[in-house]
Each structure stands twice: as structure tokens, then as C-alpha cells.
Image (cartoon, rainbow, N blue to C red; front, side, top):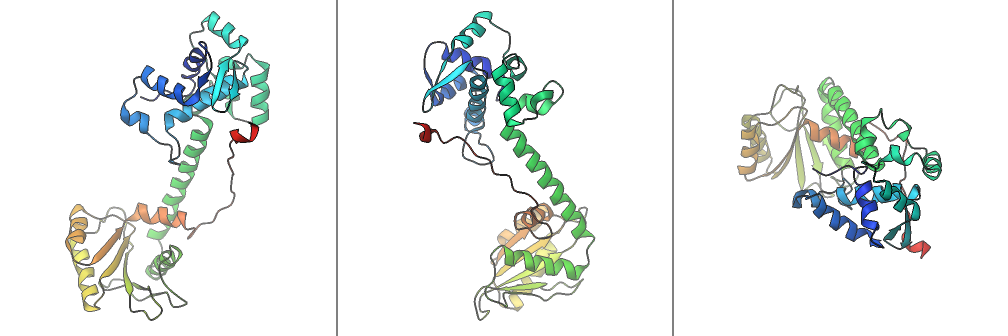
Length: 299
């Protein structure tokens, strides 16, 4: 199990007791110290730009530095301060954010950064996650709630609205060409085609769309996939997108893979995520920019 960033504070301080430490070397040494598996060592943050463990080591070092127990020596390197050595001499059982509150420099840092850590003892999330992990988790929670809301509204919408929305979403995703890029064709209850996307100016290359507005308890079976495949064959089209607000049975997905046409399936959760990503049926109200220190600037 990957330790939380506060559990790493004392080990990071102890590493620096023997002299200057390079942050990347600290990460490697701590990986061995905590006996992390290869999977745990390689686990990435959602951004894909840093491992979760390295991110937590960086935050542990940052908090210790803000309290005056560590200081940066040069780019990517740090060392212990006299105050840090005093702390190790006292050998506290644990060093965490609550412990660091005894230092005025850390309290001032908290005030400047306007964090929510004043209630660390009562808030379980900040105890185990770094601030950016907390932010990402909150973002994911908001996005999931929005996606669930959108999916519920789609299941209660009129068939014509749903089919039109699917075409609009595909166009926002980059499908289609020109002013007549897409149109709605289908009628509620038929087994034919609900929409068409033109991939070239003359509509020679087309993608046909089937949209099924079902409840979560009514998955799409293999029969509906074969019917859609048959509709594509009648129109001599080899590309199709089958979208539903419910789900697809394993047999339905297997059937889509076996058929010769290029059939793409999108179930309810995927549909909702695409709507959020491309701002269909929702809008962005606020954007937060997260900046980091550019180390080379201060060299």
C-alpha cells in the first residue's frame, strides 16, 4: 500500500540527516524502504505526468521545508536544517501536518496558501492525500455527479431529442464535414438508422448512428446489434455507432467484434462522460489554473 504523504514526512527528514539529498534519489530509497511493489511504484496520477508515490514524497518535503526543517540547496536537492536535527533528536513517533503547526513558519504558510488543513484532525481526506490529490478527487466527484445527472435526464427525454443530441455530440467530437455534416433520420421504435454523419463534402463516406434510450435495467442484446448491422448493409455502409443510455450484454459486444462492419458501441456511462468532456448539455462555470514553481528560474 502506498503510504500517505504525512507518513512520509519523518522518513524524508531522516534521509536528509546524513547530508544533501536529491529528490529523485529520495523517492527511490523510500520505495525500497516501504517495499513498494512494481505496480505501486509505477502508479501514476490522473495527469499521467508523475507517479503517485513521487508526488507524495514531493509534498512531504515541501511541508517540511515550509516548517523550516528542510531547505533547498540547488535544483532538485535539499538538506536538513538545525531545527530539523533537533526534531530528530527528540525522535517523535510521527511527524505530520498537525505536528508542524508548532512552527510559526508553517502556520504562516498555511495562512498564505489558504488551505483547508486547519481541521486536519476532523477531516479524513487531507490526512491521507496531498492537496492536489484532494483537488483531483473533488473534481472527479463533481464530474461523476454531473454525468449521472445528465444520464438520468437523457433517459427521461423524448426520443427525437435524444437522437438529435447524439448527432450533436458526434459533431462536437470532430465527426462530420461541412454544413450538412450530420442529420437525424430515425423514428422512435424502429430498427433502422437514427442518424447519419457525412465524413466528406459529398457524403460518400458516411457513419450511421443507432440511438437507444433505455433504462439501466434494459441492456442491449446481440439481436439489436445484428439488426443494426443489417440496416448498414442495406445502405452499403461499413461504419456504425451504436449508442445507448443503458449497457451492452457481453454477447452484444462479442457480436459487434465478429461482424465485418466497423461497429463502435457506447454505453450510458461512456456517453455521459463524453457529454461532459465536450460540453453537451452542460457548461463550464469556472476554471482553476494550478501552477508549480519553475525551479530553473531561480538557479
